[in-house]
Image (spheres, rainbow, N blue to C red):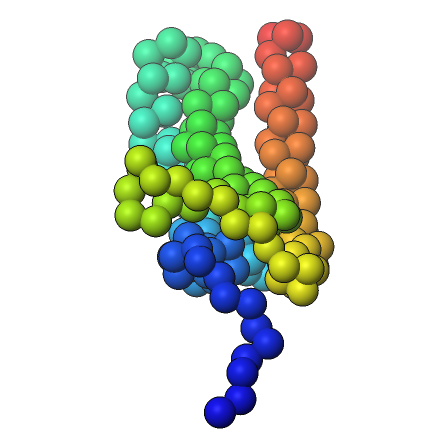
Length: 166
């Protein structure tokens, strides 16, 4: 019988960073950040459009469309941006969590409940593999999300700038 040279990992399967990464990558919500550009932007546009169902009536009460069309549009657009921004924030936080778990040398885990936490130090080959995943798989996702937040901030600031001249 041959002995395996692979290190024994005491961390429960679902708490192992590599498995947390796989679960995130395969989940319907978090997978959204990994899609091609068109497929990534489409849900943002859909969320923004659906958010108008809530922001338009609020904007209309404050700024009647017939009397203040630009103020209505700017305030409605800003209000409609809240839901997509929250969804993107949730994506970002989920990917940051997994990135942090992959990049750390020691992993905190629970064997059977909150009262028996343990730590495990990753062997060098596991640490290298995890850091490669972070560098080539997760960092591009986080960069995309950061650019999206930057674009949202730029649009919001542009709207604020226009608002000051009304």
